[in-house]
Length: 636
Ligand SMILES: NC(=O)c1ccc[n+]([C@@H]2O[C@H](COP(=O)([O-])OP(=O)(O)OC[C@H]3O[C@@H](n4cnc5c(N)ncnc54)[C@H](OP(=O)(O)O)[C@@H]3O)[C@@H](O)[C@H]2O)c1
Image (cartoon, rainbow, N blue to C red):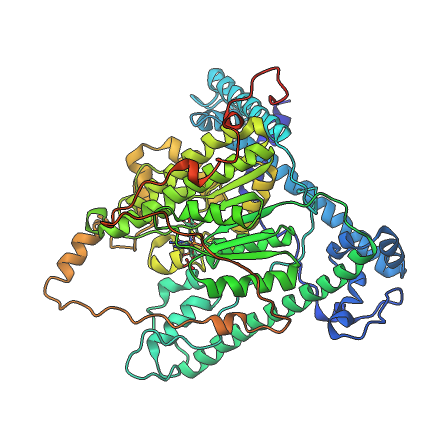
């Protein structure tokens, strides 16, 4: 009995450590497998895309089978005995992976519901009963450990199981969220040009040391692990470094091109199949993603496109949005609209809502992702920047959630995802004060909103990533310690996968990465506030010599720059768009939405308060917003 219990607890701890957010399968189909033709396939079409697509059914992974009719699948599956065996083995492996993911999710979710003080008692309960260790073999401590485990189960059953049951499922193309096998993720590749931003003396990138160093640090694999020793003179020639870097970037470009071709081929195949079998499902509305032009927002947009959800992409950089929308339409066949909006300005969130209403676009999923962070002490930041950050990180997300949330409540279905941060769980990180405060606002809002929207079947999720590489945020704080911890920074793709899956399942809080979960659930409750603040501050600040880790960047910078002349502003970064998205394939113009007019301004320039009845809900009955009454048909 004791052995079983200890084994179960050990399994629990192990599964928490092995987190379940890795990509579900090594997806990209090889070009070779696509070009083998299967005897059962109809390869009569002559265009080059359908030549590739004709052999999709003989390839693994089985995601294209979701799109094929059952007859086609059966015929192609049994075409050769070795292929059949191989496929059977692959399917078994896939089922095992799904089972493992289920277990991981269950245990990790149970763990998230443990009361904070339970951890030491739970550890005591893990020690075998026959080992008489003084203090640790205390029966009271054991009982408390087991009782907290029981509380975790009850809490999980109430929060997750009951709430997920009450949520209204979205009409997804792949309805089983746990078992869905999606098409490959379209990666973003770096530009093929050598970065010459930090010019030493010569503009030639092969002789420009700073440019080479920066590029090497930026794009070479394991850069975070090795960047701390990047000051050591590199033993190889600069020419060799440049060649190696170029080759690496070319490989990434090539990988993206292969995936792009495969996805376009899949679309061709899907179009042929859809002509035969009409889809009778009620369509899902749009997913509106703010800050979709790059970083985590772009990854979330691609992930939603993999689920075949139509998109409205919102950001300031319209060129990037149009390129992304073209890519998603070509590769995943989803409808994409783009909307240029600066959410750091007042009333823009309302105008975004109005624009979608006037265009007749029904938003079923809202992703509040757009956000910025500024590093430094708060009193030294210009007031304009402070206002913009508050507006973007806090105000806009609350306003959008209010407006679109009301629509979802009325339709009784929908999901809202807040892209917050682990720093929002720490009570104040100096040098990131405003950022962590706005993220704490989002965390709190998301959890409360989740409870409020539950009776109407609308799910609200708060995604709390830690350090995410390949984003502008990571470039701004490049010398912080957290980027140098091996295996800690995550790719935006992983964050998007975890976040979108949790959102579709209706989970309230999700923390990607076992290191972050350990910090939020173990270190934070176990340590005094001052200590966990120190951990967070150390992680988000540059490494300093011992005993000087004072985190006073403003003061240090002041001391350092006391006698120096002011540095000239950095030159504007060149646009890399041409390289990012110069891809083959048809380029269509996505549906371009134009932001509605600004609210009236008075003659003296002062802004007039926007009348809420003018912005929204005026076409609804005020009764619609009232609480449901128990016993009536409104109450769920
Ligand atoms: N990277 C991390 O380590 C990390 C960790 C935890 C949480 N997060 C959170 O994740 C979210 C996305 O961050 P990220 O790392 O992907 O940052 P990012 O690479 O800088 O991307 C930010 C996105 O927001 C958009 N945006 C910025 N200002 C905007 C404005 N005023 N109006 C409309 N859109 C605006 C940007 O597009 P345009 O420039 O084209 O407008 C861009 O698409 C943020 O909320 C951030 O707090 C990031």
